[in-house]
Every structure is written in C-alpha cells, then in structure tokens.
Amino acid sequence: MRSLPQPTPRAERHDTRRPSRRGRGRALALGVALATALTGGIATAAGATSSPATTATQPDLGPNVVVFDPSMPVSQIQATVDAINAEQIDAEMGTGRHALLFKPGIYGTDTEPLQIKVGYYTEVAGLGASPTDVVINGKIEVYNRCLDHGGTTNCLALVNFWRTLSNLTLNINGAGQDGCRASADFWAVSQAVSMRRLNITGGNLSLMDYCTDGPQFASGGYIADTKSGFIINGSQQQWLTRNSDIGGWSNGVWNAVFSGVVGAPTDAAFPNPPYTTLDATPVSREKPFLFIDGRGRYNVYVPTAQQNSRGVTWAKGMTPGHAVPITDFFVVKPSDSVQAINNQLARGRNLLLTPGVYDVAKSIAVKRANTVVLGLGHATLTAVAGAVPLTVADVPGVILAGRTIDAGDVSSPVLLRIGTKNDHHGRDGNSGSDKKSDALNPTTLSDVYFRVGGPHVGRADVSLEVNSDNVLIDHLWAWRADHGVPGSVGWDVNTGRNGVVVNGDNVTATGLFVEHYQQYNVLWNGENGRTVFFQNELPYDPPNQAAWQHDGVLGWAAYKVADDVTTHELWGGGAYIFTNVDPTIHAARGFEVPVTPGVRLHHVMTVNLSAGTIDHVVNDTGAPVDNTNTGHPSFVTSFP
Image (cartoon, rainbow, N blue to C red):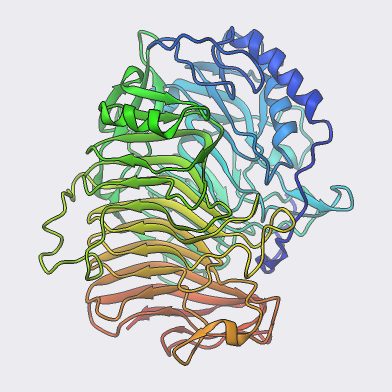
C-alpha cells in the first residue's frame, strides 16, 4: 500500500466546467438496450419504454431505475452499470438520475467479480429485507476525479457528491485489478454521499483513493447502520460514522465523529487524534428502504426511532419497524403535477419519487402524520417562480428521505418548511404544547440535500426551516454553491441567507453539513437542541469586509445559538474559512453561543484553508486561524 499523504485544504475544490457530454449517447444507448433485455421493460435505463402496469409485484418505477436479477449473466450486468457510470462520471451539474436495484441473491463470483463504479446522482441498493439478502462479490467504488489537462491531473475527491449505497453485502473482490486497486474497496467521496445498512466483508474499506495520482484530497461523508472490517480514513478531513460496527479505523484529520459505533476509537486524547466518540446516539432512526418480500411483492420498510442506541439495527434479525406495501404509495414521475401529488397525499397515500428532476411551482404539502416521502436515485425538486417546494404540517412521524431540493432563479423564502412558526422562536411559552409532535416518533429527514446555485442560478433566503418540535435531521447537506455552471455562482447571483434555521424545541441533528451561506449558516432558536457532527465552510465570495459584517461584528458565525436559549449541546463541530475573493476578510468567530451552563459544546474547531481569518473558535475563546497556520486547526475541547 502506498503511504497516505498529509491532507491539504479543501479549497482546491474549484471545478466550474459544464458536465462533459462526450460519448454520452453511445453509453446511454448501450445501457438502455441491456437494461431492457435484463428487466423486460419493467424498469429500465433512461430512454427505454417502461410498462404502464403498477402492481405489488411489478411496480412502474420509471425509466431511470434498473432492477437486476441474480440469474442475469455477470457480463450483462457489468456492461449496464459501466454504461450508466460512463454517462454520470463527469455529470456533476447534469440532470441524469439513476437507481440500480438488486433483487435478493448473489452477484459475481470469485473469478468473475462484479465491479461497479458509482457516478453522480446514482443510487446502488439491494432489495432484500436484510443486508445479507443481496451479496455483491466484487467492488462498489468511487475514485478520484481528475479535473485538469483532459482528466489526467488534479485528481481528488472534493467534488464527488450525490451518491448512495445501501442495503447489501459487499464481499470485496479485486480480481483483475492491479495490486494497488485490489488492496481495498475505494469510496473516495465528499458531501451528500451516504453508506447505509451495509455488510462489508473480505477486505479494507478506504475512504480515500490512494491509487490515483494526487492530490487525493477528500472531504466528508457518512456511514450508518453498517458492519465492516477495517476502515482507512486517509485524507478525509471530516466524517461521521453512526450506529455501526467496525473492525478498526486508521486515522483522523480534522473532525472524525463516532456515535453509537461498536469498535470506535477512543477520544481520550483529543485533539491528537481529533476523534469525538459518543457511546450511544441520543436519537436515531434509520432511513426507509425498498424491499421485495417472500411472495415477490415490493414494500417500503419504515424503521422505528431509537433512543440512546448503539450498533447496527439488523444484528439480531429484522430492524425494528414495519413494512408498508408499495400499493400504499403514489409512485411519482417528473411529469406528474403538484396538484396530482397533493391529491394523492390527501387520499392518505405515501410518495415514492422516481429518479428525475421535478419542477415545482406550488408546494407539495404533507399534512398527515406518519407520511413517508421516499426518493430514489437522488430525485430532485426544483423551485419555480419562488415557490416553497415542500412543506410539512405540525404532525408527528413524517419521514422525508433521499432527495435534493434546488433553489430556482426567483428567490424562495424557504426550500423546505417543517411545521408552522410561532412568534417567539417557535415557542409560545408552553414548550410547544400546541404542536402535535411525538418524541418517540419524530418527523425525520434522512439524506436530504439542498442547493442554492450550481447547476443553474438559484436563490432562497433559507434552505431548511424547522418550526415543529421533536424533529430528527439525519444527514443533511445544505450548499450555497461555491462552484458550478458558469454564471450560476456569485455573491449577488446565488443568494442565500441561512442554510438551516431551527425554531422548534427538542430537535436533534446527526450529520449536519451546511456551507457557504451569507449570514449564519445554522441559526438555532429552539430549546434543547442537539447536534452530533457539524461541518461548515464559510462563504468564499464576500467581495469585501463591509459586505460581510453586522452590528459591529466581523463576518457571521457558522453556527449560532440564539442569545435566549438556555439548553443546547453539540459534539464534534468544524468551521473553515477560505475567502478567496478578498483574503483579508475576518470572521470574529466560528461558533457563537450564549454563556450559560445548559449550552455546551464538545470538540469544536476552526481552520484556515489558505485565505481569510477566523479570530476565535467559540465566542472569544480559541486561537485565531489565518495564513500563518494554514491547514492547522484551532481546537476547543469543551465550552464553557
């Protein structure tokens, strides 16, 4: 194995090219032909004709879902996944969306492994009730993306976003690969990428690609409900592993957090290494998943919420929860109107969003408790004419999972609103007693991502507004784009005030990635909030200090807890600065909180990525980071 290089700042992430379309037609045509042959037209690659029938055993999942069967020749499956990867490998700002689903069984052999490369906006998932029901003998990988000189240099993982891998066993087999590639399964990714409900055997999992020539940077990701062997963190600057069982962990860079993980390293020596370890996760709920039962019927399994949990949910049998038949879902296509969607919701149905891009000019309104809205293949809702694409009433148990919500070119007040707002920070003096919430059945967001700019001009005041009490946010990336299609990014172009505003009480976040917003990236007004892992980059592009300050304070904190909040807790937080438009800019602090015994921060840090200065970590505590200590964090172990 090659030695692992020391990481350098994430500010190298700068690709602004339009996605390459070279060779797309040929690759897509191959994928369509093979997928049609493999699935009989039920669920095919983009462009094929799908069956109009939607039944429990043969749902119409749209043209961008491929369902594989273990009886299919490995060579045919390999050709199909290779064709989709060829389409998606450089399509960072493209519109393609894909789900590759595997029926229960074994795929690949010792001598003919199935080796899948996962590109942008691609979901790979098993359709078993247990992760052990689908076995892939081979690899499922993401490599560095090489951004310069025709794709040969500047190779890194800093823009490897929007991918999903879940609900299967990966028996690592590198047969046919060279010695370096065969040494591990490579999952070199950054934000908006999740690994969930996996059983990884047979070798090491590497979260960096040390086989592609450098710089090999990687910056963030998420693992949950997963059992694996040894994990090589490598150059990953921050990472959250939640409710899992691991065989070891190699190192940390700036901010590695473990919550409810069997085999997690101790954090006793923080910040060297920079580990934050919670024995149990305060509140957790695993993401719903599609599966096929013993009679060949499709269902969505909905796990129950857990309190103070540890380890994987499936170790002793079926994950606690319940199955909902696919016939209780409205299977949504991008061509369906919002009116049709809301009519189905009013009839008591859940939503299954098939892969695609949805233009939303009127709110999709979820009003019924326990409604499930599950997206496949990174289904994307785009605001039209300043709409709020998705709203949820003050009801318990709603689950929103697996989607991206994009701002449009007319500014939206908010992209996702949970609950109704009271006058006083979401609190009316009765601890939210007027709201219909349930601490044991929280409304839950899993793998929900936001974009303001990037693929097109986007504007939104707030990306996520949480007004309800007892909400769980489990892996969220809110991104005011720092790069994208030319003309889509700029201080006065893709405007976004706040990424996440929490007004409700008893809200918990596990995996909160929020970046580049123009004021507070996170503003927490509710009582008894908890965050396990926070990652942030402050905005790159303030034109000068005068444009980025308020009330005599330089800049805006990444994470702000309102002055009148009395109880709040955060474990493992990082805020970074790279003000490349004006490197002289200062932010007074990374974190800003009231000084009171009930507000506590554990293991927080700031870092300079080569431009700009953060004067303090929390309030007026913590050493500054600037160009004299680029890449070297300033840590505060506990506050106050």
